[in-house]
Length: 57
Image 1 (cartoon, rainbow, N blue to C red):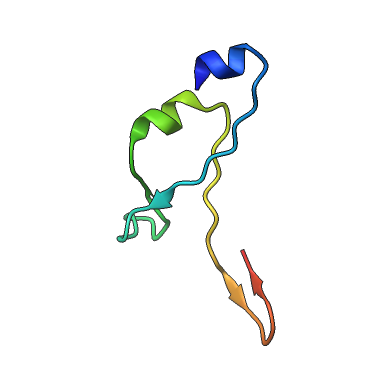
Image 2: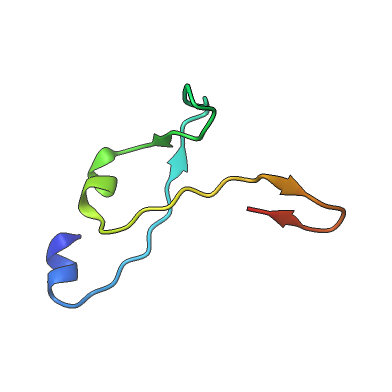
């Protein structure tokens, strides 16, 4: 991925979280840590409010 980015490429990737929550109650990244180590920015989305017809993440 780094070589691709150095040549001007942009990559958007999706990954999953661990089934179990961390000690702080938050999601834990799950999968190959190489992806998180190679990116410039990583986000974790989680649901925190459910309304009648929509969900806020």
